[in-house]
Image 1: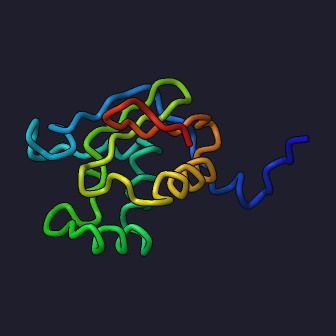
Image 2: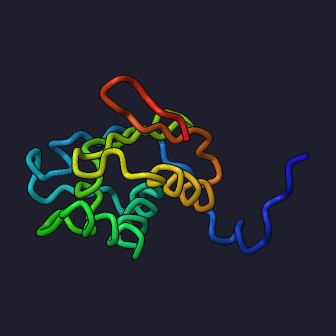
Length: 130
């Protein structure tokens, strides 16, 4: 049987965004130098929290991601797409094959945005569901 969310967890939950796609050129700033995820985007808020966490800092350091990419969504992901309750993320090459990265991210995303049902890692040969 499914357990009801605790009041504390529900208080921290954010609403689910409408479907969107953030491309590599948008995330890198090539499309528009001033582009960043909309402030109203729950996914943007949660991904920013994740990439600025101590865990992500360790990933960035281990994978030698630095400069303007450090602590930024585009430092970890080439693209982000939300379709209904499915969130698709394509990791940057430097962040591919980091053991446990997507499992940890999926757990964090679902805690903050419980409406997300499927977190998908887009890889060269297909996709991994977390």
